[in-house]
Image 1 (cartoon, rainbow, N blue to C red):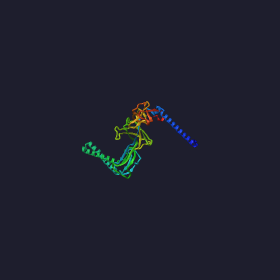
Image 2 (image 1 turned 120 degrees about the vertical axis):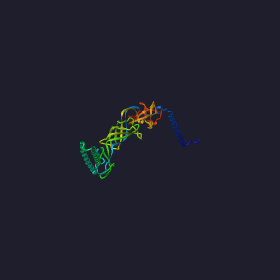
Image 3 (image 1 turned 60 degrees about the vertical axis):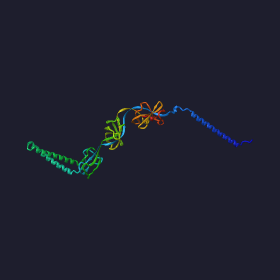
Image 4 (image 1 turned 45 degrees about the vertical axis):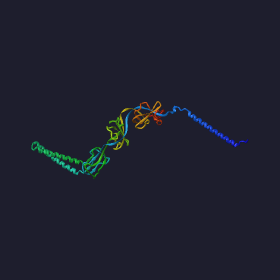
Amino acid sequence: MGMIKPERMKEKKITIAVLLVVLFSGVFWWLQRSGEQVRPVSAYQKLVPVTAVTVREVNVRDSLSVTGTAEAFRDVDVYSETSGLVRKASAEVGDRKRAGDVLFLVDDELQGSSLKKAKIAYEKAALDYRRYHALHEEGAVSVSVFESVRLKREEAETDMIEARKKYRDTRIKAPVFGTVARKLVDEGEMVQPGMKVAGLVDLSRLRVKFFLTEKEVEGIMPGNRLTVLAGNGAALEGRLSTLSDKAGSARTYEAEAVLTNSVTEPLRAGMFVRVILKGRELRHVRVIPRTAIDGTIKSPEVYVVDNGTARLRKVTTGREYGDLLEITDGLVAGEQVVINGRNELRDRISVRVIPQNKRDVAP
């Protein structure tokens, strides 16, 4: 009987040790896996964690913000009523003119001569009238002769008035107070009747025009206070002047406010402005944070927490007040709506409400 070599004995011991290690590892893995499968899962761990806020009722003063356009209170085109050569121009773009200030002086030599002749003719006719009137009173002239003299005086007066008007038309004047916005002719140029020569804008007051949707126009009426904010930092206070009773092609209602322009930071015609309209009275409304809204704008929904269950409910929204949204139908005060954790929710799923961080609490 031969003896086992020491090398073979050593290899055999190593093989047995490896097998034992593999066996014990397998047993340990099986025990661990079996323990995980049988370990009970608490109902608390199955609940979806969410944060929620309470639907509350508050008093609000309706307000809304829309974009508008500032327009000059008056934007007037100035036309020539005479023909001739412009002898002098007294208007430059940016000049402020009072009503009646001369903008352009047109050659008036012919008109002046015609006016002088008309005055002489009128004076002669007036003198004849006084003379014949005295004779008529004495019965020295017939009624027909006296009437003929009277008509000649009236005709001469009419000619003089017409000649004076033509002479005055050689002075093209500002029809209203305003600033020269357009200068279309200069000295040495010819003008004709009906020719546009300048444009004036009155920016002492402004017409601010804007449009309101069907939803925005509710509760708004002439007399409501408003604030107009411009990009240059100016803020104008005033009231709504007019509001259309009929919607336009875009289903919006045109509104207008007439405001006194700022002296230090005046608004210019054509500027875009922000119009903030304020309601007259306080309203009692239900509000929730906008972050609670799920679904689309046309079909908003919220998750309401009811006895530990999240229930999906359709709601009707109203106006926005900062981070809060008015709820006109679908919720009552005191109910809880989910604001965080909605991505993990579905209708009728069990939830647990966790404490809110301060930043999650609606103001």
